[in-house]
Length: 224
Ligand code: ADP
Ligand code: 5GP
Image (cartoon, rainbow, N blue to C red; front, side, top):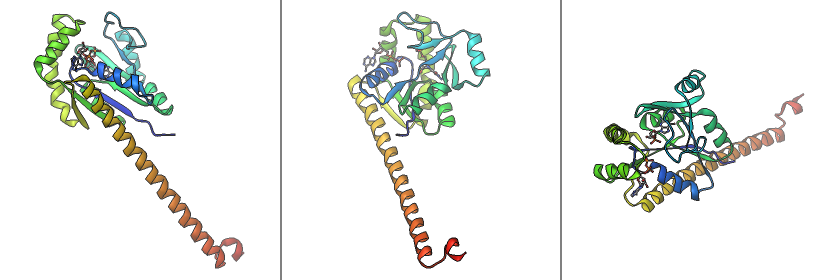
């Protein structure tokens, strides 16, 4: 079976992470979405278990204490985290697990799962980011202000990601991210094929050595 891996998508709020991820999921059967746990209240239209697993502060603290989370962080005033079980079960099923995380979560994933692929999505400009947040119309003016203020901190960490993509034209951004994922899969499959080839060569060499030893009467059985 292929070696599946986690894919982290980060970027400031409103940049289009959810939109890009949704497009990728719709067209890539090898991808599965990691539903995060959060203490944020659901927005209109959000479903428990589909967009997030919505939990209380106490439930979140219990998950942390029990060591159930692969990463977690306080983002825009609420706690968010990824269940270890989601990563384990998805990758064991041979699917790459794509997750929408803030940069604190992205850095934790790189430490805990070094095989993770980290992709940062940039806005074309600060004004466009603001327009998208306001246009989405899911957050109050206060919440939008907090998210715009936090965008600077997020952008500063971008250079620590494996890849950066600017979401100006949506279709182009999706294609770019798809290209990064496909290239990574091909590189990893290639590495595994090379490793398999090397192991087969080693086995072949060992068999030749044993065969040679047997012919020259050097095996234990022959000696005894
Ligand atoms: P995030 O998940 O990063 O917070 P969303 O995916 O919710 O962001 O996108 C924020 C808003 O911007 C949504 O209304 C979405 O439809 C819109 N949007 C996303 N990508 C683009 C784009 N390339 N051009 C214009 N609007 C976009
Ligand atoms: P939103 O409230 O808009 O859905 O998400 C707010 C922020 O939380 C986004 O930056 C998103 O990437 C981040 N986020 C969502 N789920 C997780 C998670 O499981 N862990 C971390 N660290 N951040 C998350």
